[in-house]
Image (cartoon, rainbow, N blue to C red; front, top):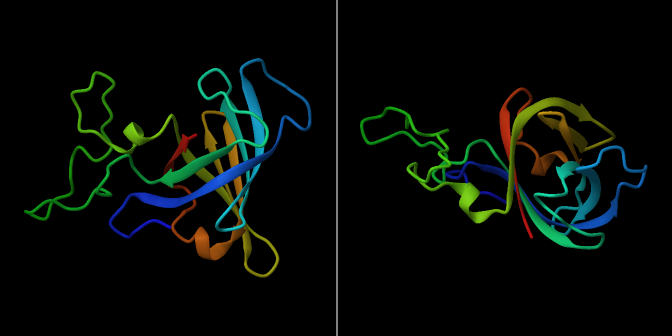
Length: 156
C-alpha cells in the first residue's frame, strides 16, 4: 500500500468483472464492477467512457489520493505547509503531480462510510455525480476519511 510520506491513501490493481450489468443509463458514462488482486476489495465506479475506454476483463491500476502532490503536502523547511499542495495547472506551469502518472483523474469527496460484518467496510465517494464504492477489510481503508476530499486516479 502507500507510504506515510505520500498522499496516496489506497492503491491496488483491479480486474473488471462486469460493465453496466444493470443496463446502460447514460450515453457517456458506464459503471464498472471490479475485484482487486492484492487486497480482495470490491469496486464499483462510474466513469466517462470517452475519456477512459476500458473493456470487460481488463485490468487497471487505481489509487485514491488526498492530494495530487507527490510529497503528500509535507511542511516546508520553515515549518509552513506547502501553499501549492492542491494546485493543478493545465497550462503546465505548475509542479508535476500524481496526475502525470495516470490516464484518468477525478476529484470528489468521501460522503459515506459503512461498517459491515466483522472487519468489512464500504467507503463511498462522489465525483460530481459519478460514484465510487469500495468494499473490503478496514485495514486497507484506514487512511480514507469521511468528509475528506479525494482524488481517484486510474491507469491501464
